Image (tube, rainbow, N blue to C red):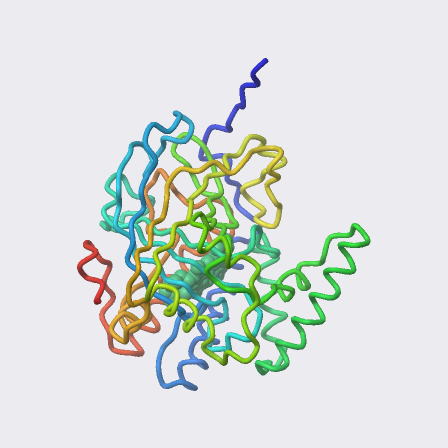
Amino acid sequence: MTTITSYVRYRPDLEQPFPNEEELVQQVVTAMLHANQQVAAKHRHGLRDAHAKSHGVLAGELRVKPSLPKHLAQGLFAAEHTYPVIVRFSTAPGDLRSDQVPVQRGMAIKVIGATGPRAVDDGFTTQDFLLVNHATLPFGTIGEYAKLQRLLESQPRQSDQQLQVAGLGARLAARTLSHLGRPSPPQIETLAAANNHILGETFHSMAALRYGDHVAKLSAAPRSTNVRALTGRPVDKKAGESALRDLVVDFFAHNSAEYELRAQLCTDIDRMPVEDASVLWQEELSPHQVVATLHLPAQDAYSDARRRYADDVLSYNPWHALEAHRPLGSIMRSRRSAYPRSSEFRHTFNGIEQHEPASIDELPA
Ligand code: HEM
């Protein structure tokens, strides 16, 4: 007997405003801007307010699989097609930390030439997917996120060494709690990331987005054997402050890599909510289904020209999106003002014009 899975159909009322949402978003965005100003004053250069440090900037292709079944053949993935992409690997803090600090890593994918109705009226033809190497956002609503931010603001800035020690303690605590069958509190989960080779990681959207007629979370997982072999490989403690950049540059000097882009479609809106990104969507409820391959050929992954372009000119933003991939939930809605504000600040500070690419040729070699 075959079971027919029923995928939740997208409807605008799947989203529900969070109490005092506007006020909380303003609080978060203002606090971020304040932190951003301090970091810019320190470096005398404007950086991203999150994911400031890049480790590699790659040109590649997103190859949408042919003949996807109807529930997967949606939006950008409606038909077999190859899109040029610019991928930026990064680390979460809004400052330049040592790569020996085990914090979350990011993979941002800018798909170029995505035509169709937009989620916001920006006139662009890019579709950005912003992914982090953790499946959930521990502070999964704008209310929890604002609380986290107040906590961070009340603490003095920690040095790289303090963060390394805190990470070690958190990993021990997380391991102990998991032995006891208990979930880790969000603070521990955030600090407990292991420091592994960035190219072996699996990256997640953490929050939900519209997937054409349905709703999904997206992820990118290593597919070629060379990057699968890097999963769980620790970063050498003696490899220095820019260990991740060095690993990425060395790898792509001689190798190409493939990742698979997967959609996990919502099948149960109560157990797979869009308004709380801290809830893990269980694979038993819906598997990760491959919709495209991300192909990254061998190349110079971090020339000076590329670094300047990706760090200073480019902006990734989950709202650079087709309406078919509208970001969903209070965390995603908060990002609608947070990203342009951060981008505007650093572009103005650095005297560089914002520009959204229309062609892969705009990425320097
Ligand atoms: C679902 C949760 C989230 C994910 C997966 C995520 C992921 C990312 C990634 C990968 C980047 C780097 C993009 C690049 O390479 O340029 C980034 C940047 C950034 N994120 Fe997030 N993020 C999340 C939530 C948030 C939230 C809730 C906020 C604030 C309300 C936020 C604020 C920012 C800002 C300000 C930037 C820098 C934007 C720029 O200056 O261009 N993020 N994020």
